[in-house]
Length: 230
Ligand code: 5RP
Image (cartoon, rainbow, N blue to C red; front, side, top):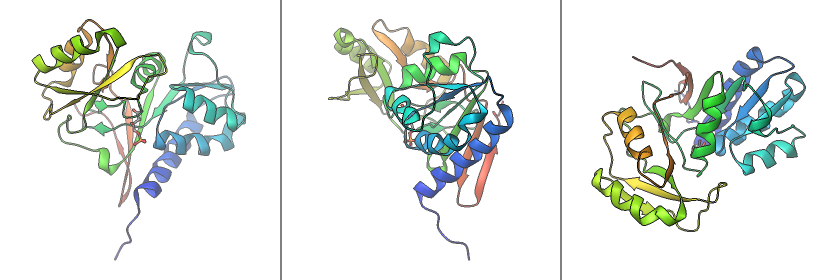
C-alpha cells in the first residue's frame, strides 16, 4: 500500500521538478521569471541553490521579489530586460489545454505581463488544481478603483457573480473582483477577451489566449508532465 503525501509535500515535489527542468535550460546570461504564491515560493527557495547558473530574475510581485532578494538573488525590473528565458508560476486551476485561472494571490496582471515576455511558461501545480472545466475557482479580475461598480455590473451581464476582495490592493494600486458561478467556462479565450474589453478592467485571471507551455502536476502517483491538448 502507498502512503499519502500532503499538499505541501506535493508543492515541494513539483517545485523540485521545475528546478530540474529549468536548470537544463538556462545559461549564465539567462533571466528567470518568477511567479507568486505558495508553490512559486517553494520554487524560489529551491532555485536559490542554483543562483550562480543564471544572471538574474524578474518577479511577478513585490512579495516574490523580496523573497528572491532574501536569498541573495538579483531581481531586475522587467523594463530592463529584452528577454525572459523561462517563467515559472503556479495556478489556481488548469485544464488539458493548459488554460489557467490565476490571481488567487492578486498578482495576475504582473503574471500575465511576464508570461507575455517569456520564451516559455512553465506552470507548477498540485493535483487539486487540475480540472475538466475552468470556473469553479472564482475568476479574479483586476480593476481600476473608480470603475469597480461599473465593471461589476458588466460582469453580471456575463452571468458572473462578482465579489469585491475587500482589503486587497494590488501591487499596481488596483482592486480585485472575484467572479463566482462561471463554471463551466466554455470558451476560455472568448471570455478572457470579453472581460478584458470592459472599460476599467486591467486584466483578468484567465490565461487562455497564451496558456502555459508545459505543466508539471504533482499527484499521489508522482509528477505528471502535461503538454497542451489541442
Ligand atoms: C497568484 C497566483 C498563484 O499562482 C495561484 O494563486 C496559485 O497559488 P498557490 O501556489 O499558493 O496555490 O496566480 O496571483
